[in-house]
Amino acid sequence: MRRRDFLRNGVPMAVLPALFGSIGVKAFGKTSMIDSLLKVTGTDNDHVLVLVQLFGGNDGLNTVIPLDMFSRYNNARPNIAIPEASVLRLDGTLKTGLHPSLTGLRDLYNNGKLAILQSVGMPDPTYSHFRASDIWESGSDSTQTLNTGWAGRYLNYEYPNYPVGYPNTTVTDPLAVQIGAANSFALQGPAMPMGINIEDPSNVYNLTNGFTDVLPAVHAGTELNFIRTIAQQTQTYSQVISAASNAVTQQSVYPADNYLAEQLKIVARLIKGGLKTRVYMVSYDGFDTHSSQVEAGASTTGKHAVLLKTVGDAIKAFQTDLQYLGIEDKVMGMTFSEFGRRIKSNDSSGTDHGAAAPLFVFGKKVQGGILGDSPDIPASVTDEDNVPMQIDFRSVYSSLLQDWMCVPPQDLNGMLLRNYQALPLMQQNACRQCTVNGNRPVYQQSGISLISNSPNPFVSSTTITYTTQGMHTMVQVMNTSGKVIKVLVDKVMKQGTYTVSFDSTNYPPGTYYLRLQNMELSQVKAMMIVAP
Image (cartoon, rainbow, N blue to C red; front, side):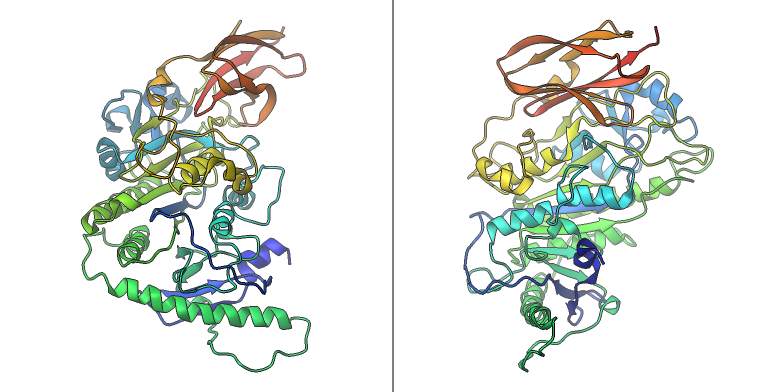
């Protein structure tokens, strides 16, 4: 068995009596033990991050509809496109709308509690569910395999040496809580997963605490000792989780028959009940919509519409409950899916695995608005064409860690393994301890063209003109699969407008994309190579 499979699926887990109906609690871990005890506290704030994972690869183009590219969008997917009259309009913009099922997210956006991030993805996309999920959860490059998750590295930074000596008088509560799904690799730390899982206890076997007998003289003796440690921790954690749950006697209304809403309701309850957990993770499955994504002749209904309604209604109810409970100031949430779908729909009224897609960041302290431009859809689209990356997904992690979890910028490299552009996701007062460099009006710059090329189309070479505000600047060329094939500029520059040449001799005719990254700002524009 591969080490990652063991960590994700094979680690013995301790299960205790149910706390929320049929939902029980378990702690999970790996076999590395450290004998010393280091009692530490995390960053001195009460901020909480809630991660909402949408399994299957959500269709971004039918979630966030490019009204300024509507004719090309409609031509690319005539059997599933949302009618223009049905698109939910957003305050302050005529360029972008939402799927008609997302009334909850529309309301949050119009109240300044939702940010829409356009075309979030990776430089070298993969279309495998498992590999793409690993990349998103670990924060790795596509060619790299890591044994830790991005959130696990963050929690290890805040609470080193876990689980030895935890819980203690200073750190009494679980570091992370995952509800519902199998263990997420995002929470894997250098030694072990950094959290507690709340799920149906019938899926795993029960281990009791209080082992005192001598360890057997077998190869796995250390592992057994570790399992016993986890079992004892689980009992302790179940007590503080029960206390937090029992401290809350009333919440606002959540939609019925909505599994994601049930998970988020538990999260709100635990936060209000005083649990000092830093990261929560919930999930919802079913977004692999290869066929029957919509109902025939009624594209606003069908499988995808039901999925999006579930998500939108759940997040809206959660945000309403946070406000009702008086804890809205301390919670920030983010949705993500392992990839998006192709630009062109298929013949089965569905969409196939793609590359970049929008994601949502929600909360009272979010810098509401739309970050990035609508995807630049070519006039002629093939079955293989993808939405290219505009924002690297690790930039979202970096920005949340720095500006919400208050990680000093110089420490981010240890968690994300390199520097990524900072995004203006948080209001300036979101984190008192963060050094806020003033959210520049990036949301308003989306209508200004900062990168272009001439001639376009071109045969063998073209001149790219780009404008930078200074500091780190990157110019990349991507193919229609969304893969970066050439980096033309990657350096610190002075403010100004510059040119760089691109020689297309070694590239076949077709559509390509230019990507400009300048600190928190990204723009993507299409260009075309034609045969001589």
